[in-house]
Image (cartoon, rainbow, N blue to C red; front, side, top):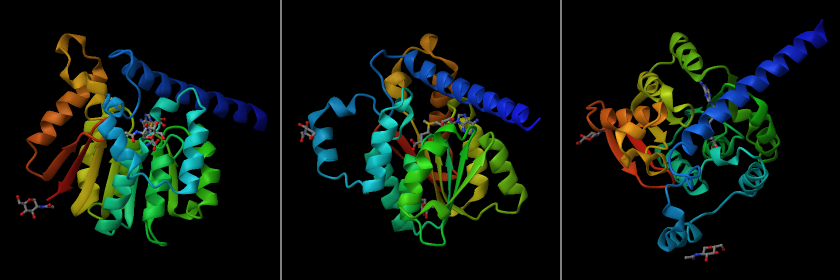
Length: 256
Ligand SMILES: C[S@@+](CC[C@H](N)C(=O)[O-])C[C@H]1O[C@@H](n2cnc3c(N)ncnc32)[C@H](O)[C@@H]1O
Ligand SMILES: *[C@@H]1O[C@H](CO)[C@@H](O)[C@H](O)[C@H]1NC(C)=O
Ligand SMILES: *[C@@H]1O[C@H](CO)[C@@H](O)[C@H](O)[C@H]1NC(C)=O
């Protein structure tokens, strides 16, 4: 009986991972053939390379986690190190203690964020599958910050709802949205509920490998979701914003 249950949950986890990853990669492939995660072409610009070469300071465990992840076939989902370093610097400057990551993958940004949190800080790490999260865990442990990361495996919207139901609205300092694009607007709205005034929600992939500039007739559902949310956030009086052309584009929205 036990083994039946285990096989069943393994199969379910496998299906969930496969569906999420294939959906993500298909979404990206549908646009420019040369596109890859975390970049809309900026890295082919020598000045951008120069800026990265002269600013990236990767913690040894982050470096090892990235090298491990780059060997996976689905490595294009990996967040850009210069972007993660920026978010960690902002988190330190803001004194972030309570943070949420929506879309963990192998946990590169989760580790980067955990390193920026105080000893009693907490990161709620949301993903629908723990297959890749578990590949990253040993590096969190080696860095001595595993205790700060609280992994929640289920659709992220459910986890955000649970946090709101638990009375945690208005108590979070920082949210990073980096999961399924079709739910970005839902994540954005729930993040605004969970954030304290002055708190920050960072939305990843807002330039979507340049596809935000393509003709509407060529858009996938993911592209449409990103374009729609970009427009909405631009007009949203509830936040002060910057859209940065770092990596694949990241919007910083500070709750008023
Ligand atoms: C781009 S990757 C995240 C990259 C990660 N932030 C990093 O630092 O490398 C997107 C992740 O979102 C997860 N995901 C997809 N749909 C989801 C959902 N509905 N709820 C939670 N996570 C989801 C995928 O399993 C995948 O691990
Ligand atoms: C940046 O570093 C990479 C790797 O060391 C090197 O190949 C590239 O030429 C450097 N580019 C600039 C502009 O510094
Ligand atoms: C948003 O910007 C306004 C000025 O335009 C400022 O008064 C306010 O403090 C800012 N709020 C946040 C959370 O940054």
